[in-house]
Image (tube, rainbow, N blue to C red; front, side):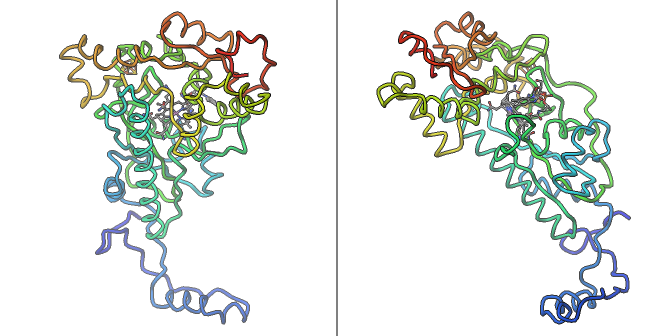
Length: 382
Ligand code: B12
Ligand code: SF4
């Protein structure tokens, strides 16, 4: 049965079947809370909500909660086979996933000032978490079980680094629900908002009257600006993605980069030795990431992407100006690039961006090697 709506627009509960009073031990039955619940049931409250939620009601709920687009997808969708076990572990009885997208402000993401771009990512992250929590609460109030895993962090660090640490893969869910398609840079591109979206998913134990349909084209226009923008060559022209190169640089101040930094502290003989390995700016930046949400070092692939109907116009009008004002400031920015020794990223960064200092790090994946020579100190943290 599909949900009809009550006066407040919520799915109207089905009339209560004559409630069979559960057989309870006398002490439990006499408890004031138990008596109150049974009395409410007797008065017709507490009936089961409809088994199938109205898709339009659900979409309106998501938009009112702060999402810019939303669609539901059944957990039985073939493309979600890899997510099933994770979703059931998080919320046993999950039947549907609700995918939501929240827009980011484009020029904030494009700014070479990391503080501006990071603020935009974190604010949108907050907004998406807030939207998902609001939807979860509304579903709970309507009588369903629902759960919202985080947009980004926190994640399941007890599994790090041997297993995946995210509860749900928001990209996989969003694509199956039809919110967009992954572009060359492996982010989901929304047909209208382009790459400038963050994603979030709500799990719930009911079905929905209509599910989203996958997009029949990819909004990626294959311009390869993301390839040109990535300072460590993590995105190849053929679409191969070097997640380790991206994590080592971009996530320098997240879990693995932090571990590398902590090892450097532990390995330093004294303050002077520490300061010979870590610059004042790097120490300050690590402090900032520990005291406010951690800062991404890049995200340039997303920043330069011209795809999406709301974004594409200026690129179509004048591609040279678009490159001069969006791509080039990021390419020309002087900034330290973090790479694993001997990696493709190291060779690429030195060759393509000779004006950006390149620093070898362990990435926190291994204990640091003993320092070799003092001349090495400027380029190694361990
Ligand atoms: C892991 C992760 C990363 C990793 C790996 C990226 C990746 N492509 O998977 C790293 C640290 C590199 C990363 C970076 C960024 N991320 Co990220 N990330 C995630 C996370 C937690 C899971 C991604 C996922 O589903 N992977 C599985 C499949 C679907 O991805 P895939 O591309 O098909 O396959 C690759 C990965 O599986 C990877 N991989 C497999 N196992 C492991 C294990 C580890 C430890 C790592 C690092 C990678 C990895 O290798 C595969 C081949 O490339 C999600 C949040 C979430 N809970 O969903 C955000 C998410 C994908 N990230 C997001 C963003 C915005 C970014 C950054 C722009 C952040 C920034 N400001 O710089 C960059 C962009 C880098 C890029 N081009 O992808 C957004 C994307 C929004 C969108 N429009 O699609 C998400 C959805 C967060 C969100 N809630 O909005 N991210
Ligand atoms: S920058 Fe160009 S190639 Fe890269 S994802 Fe966006 S549209 Fe596709």
